[in-house]
Length: 182
Ligand code: NI
Image (cartoon, rainbow, N blue to C red):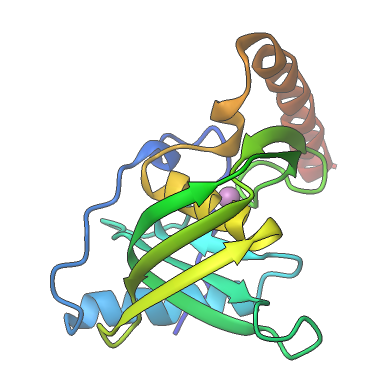
């Protein structure tokens, strides 16, 4: 297992549309899953990661996340979702969101997401799994599925807000580059 590098915006690979997993037993796929889980558990303050935001060759439609559904106080369980499909969504929430690939310590923006999401997919053994989640996890699903479609949460912003945020991101990137030089 290996901890993978998280790609940073504006890395063009963040626009990759991932291909579905066709053979769950493919050792490359199982290695990808193991590495993604290893990366998740070694990344503090990270709720989920999609294959397309990691330094992976030919990323597949896989994401990993912490499912807090069972018991909010229980130990966080890293969960794997392969070939996720949104069955339906309900309601709307307008809340702040961030992303490990978009300077999460500095950049947040409020965007509109469904309040409740019904999603299905496969687990790492190929068994069908289904989730109906609200709040943070509902948003998280949409966020990760967006990643697998080459889309970032900031792509949901209205043009004016996006232009303003891009300026802020540019400044953060410049600051980070300066810190590296020092
Ligand atoms: Ni993200």
